[in-house]
View 1 (cartoon, rainbow, N blue to C red):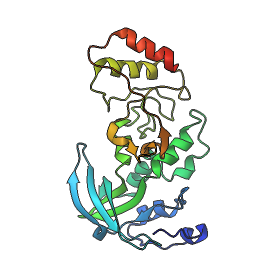
View 2: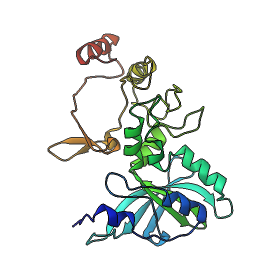
View 3: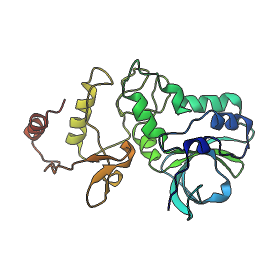
Length: 257
């Protein structure tokens, strides 16, 4: 059972200081909408570390008892390598923070290119839990859902920032992501066409969403990657042999860009 403490208590909760540079990054973070902030995570809470399809990214199990919880919580996490103890310098951590837009609240007013960026960034970074040291190396720890952003959207080839969108970056650069596929060439092209014909990051476009990223509670369908937004699933009879006219009909009936 979860007991939510007052926000002022959450803001003053203590945590262990381990590395001065990472310590400063954690200290400058603010609680998100759920009252959580970045934290230092003891390696004793982490087990079953395994590799992932991407370099420097690992999956693991985190077992811990959060404050005001009555029971131990067990979650699947993603661990992203920062540096070894010797290589973790103020510059490397500062560059890491820039690439992953940390702390998030610093970007609250950065909406000159993308008015939705602030909200999408908050959704994305709510999955980031903090940092840990494992086998003498430092890692960022995040919920496994964060891996969806990491693998599907990729990094901007101009500024290097991890994107919140499959086609646009906050710097204004337009670049279609190749980190996804529907396994249907025609459908992939149909989705990418909607993305590439946008004139700004504020225009609507289609996106491929893996089915394992959709949760069904029996009474609603929602996507954790979009902060548990509710969606409706509409069946489309599309195969590798589907005629091009089918996509024209989909565009017409659903007013797709």
